[in-house]
Image 1 (cartoon, one colour):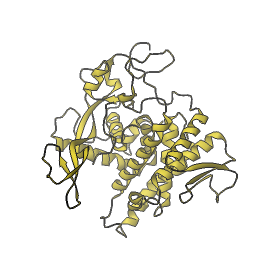
Image 2 (cartoon, helix red, strand yellow):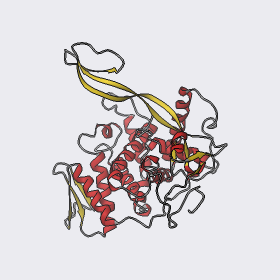
Image 3 (cartoon, helix red, strand yellow):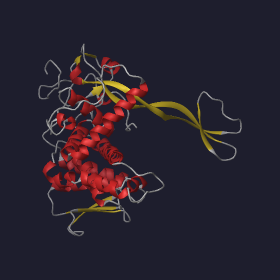
Image 4 (cartoon, helix red, strand yellow):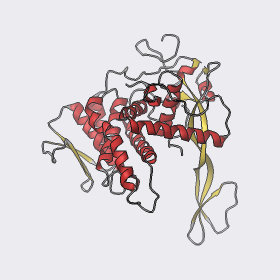
Length: 385
């Protein structure tokens, strides 16, 4: 895995400062502005160097329960401090609930979290649908469809990595510590993802063009080449699932940002980024095999931006390459999360919600910053602004 410091280094190798230190008190608006600026800087760097895109994917394999934007923010802040990559992060109070305390003098890492409010869904007499705060009285002729929490804005949330805490020992699987996935189990779980999305998987000796795999949206079928070994078949299926989850005929977001039919290169980069991250989370490093796809992602982003300067899609203003990169990162990590939630890789995806506080510590496990024998909080699943 590439070092975290690569994510925030300039051409000379020196770390770039991005915003005020984490212990500076900012207003909520200033904090969001600062985090957004830092996220844009990280994405600019990832476009300038495809290797930094791979760094983000590596981190996303460990922190897959987080949005891509927050993964980039965590990596950037840890790199600025010259410390190791984040593995398991949580808020101050949540660490306390798991028997751990933040070390004195540690400064928080910041992520972007949603502000939510309870709203009631109403259908008015004229058929119009409307959301009203729960505390507000509804019109007498309105029909309620129940309550829901909706995102009303964004805020900065302070979190700490496990290496910034002490207390009750926790099992913290380290990246690369696994010997690799059980390929048969992983294949079955990927087939389950395909089935959940209405696709069947066929392993066939018939080749479609020069491809090793093909997704037919009309027939709702994924074809995988019979001539490959098991790991290659798993990798190709993960890639095709990236297409299934991201590039269907109803993918209006992909069309808007230059993916899918408009920029096949960007669509292929998205699908391979999904496959690379899924396999990485299961202890399989497909870096050499994915190199061509991943190296081409930045060119695809730049080409998409160039073409969007010539034509405005769906009435939207021309989109910058940072907006395109942010969309790609969000789409890739959302699709990855959907797959990993089914395939259940080792580790906790960066969040303590999956941790059993009474988990037995075994001598064969490895640890990060945890003394003794011997990487959340229920944070945001969506990227911020």
